[in-house]
Image (cartoon, rainbow, N blue to C red):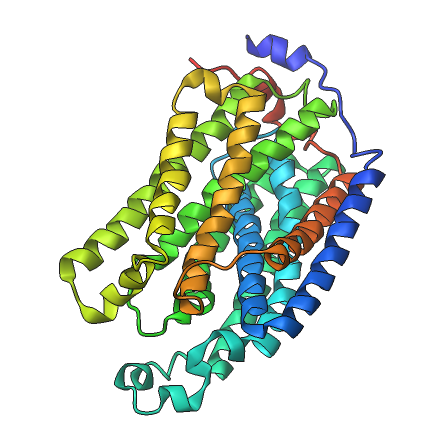
Length: 403
C-alpha cells in the first residue's frame, strides 16, 4: 500500500470497552473465592497457604512486569506493528500498584513461614548463611522491595500517562521522544530490580543455592507468559468487535513469533543453568536439582521440560498455526498453565520433598489474584480507548504485512 493511501485512510476509533459488567462480576467472584480460599488454607496449613500465595503473587508480578517491558520497548524502538495492541499491554500494567500491596502482605505475614533464613536459630552456625546475612536480612529486604516496586509504579505510570495523553491531543512526537528516554531508564532499572526480586522471593527459598542465571531464567518464562495473555486478550477483543478492523492475522503472527522466541529462550536459559551446575558438580549448587530429581519430583521435572518447551515449540512452529486465532488461544492457555506448574516446581520442593501438593486451595488463591488482574484490566479498558487511536504508527500497522 502506498503512503498516499495511508494518508487518506480513515481510522475508526473502536472506543472504550463497553458492556463488560458480566466480566467484572466474574472477576469479582474470583476475588471473593481467592480470599476465602486463602483464609481457609491459612487455618489448615500455613506453610502450604503461603507457598500458594507466593506462586500466585509472583506469577502476576511477572506477567504485569513483562507487559511493562514490552511497552517500554515499543516506545524505544518506535515500533509500527504493535500500535493496535500496545494499549492492551498498557492495561496489564494497571496491576503493578497491586504488587506493592501483595509484597507487603508477603513480607509482613508470610516471610517467617516461607524463608528459613529469617529464623536466627537456622542461620546460627551455618557458615554459608552467616556469610549472606549482609544481604539476607529482613530490614534490607523491606528496603529494596519497596524501592523496586515504587520505581516500577512510577516509571510505568509515566509511560502510560504520556501514551494516554496522545489520545487527548498531546503531541505524539513529544510523547515518543520523552518515552524513549523513560523507557531506557525503566529497562536499566528493571534488569537489576527484577533479578533481585526473583532472587529474594523465589531463589532464597533455598538460601544455600548459588546460581548466576536465575534472574534471566525467570524473566524468560515471564515474557513467554505475558505474550500468552496478550494473545488471549487480543483474540477476545477481536471477537468482541474492538480490534477486528485494526488487527489481522499478521499481528497475531507477530505475537505468536515472540511467544515462540521466548519459549526457546526459556529453554536455553534453563538448560544453560542446569548444564553449568551439572558440569561444575559443586555441592552448594547441585542440591537444588538433586531435590527436584528425587523419586517424588523426577517425573514432574521431565514433564516441565516437555510441557513448557517441547509442546509449545511444536505447536507454534508451523506458520499457519501462528495465524490461527483458535489454535493460538489453545496454546496460550497451555503456556499459562505450564507457567503455574513451573512456579510450583520452583517453590514447593522446599516444603514438600516427596512431590507436589495441589488442590482446591491452590486453584482458589490463583483465581483470587487473577480476579484482581482481570478486574483492573477491564477497568482500564473501560476508562480509556482500547487502541491508541492518534498514534502515528497506527495507519502503517493496520496495513501491516509480512514479506
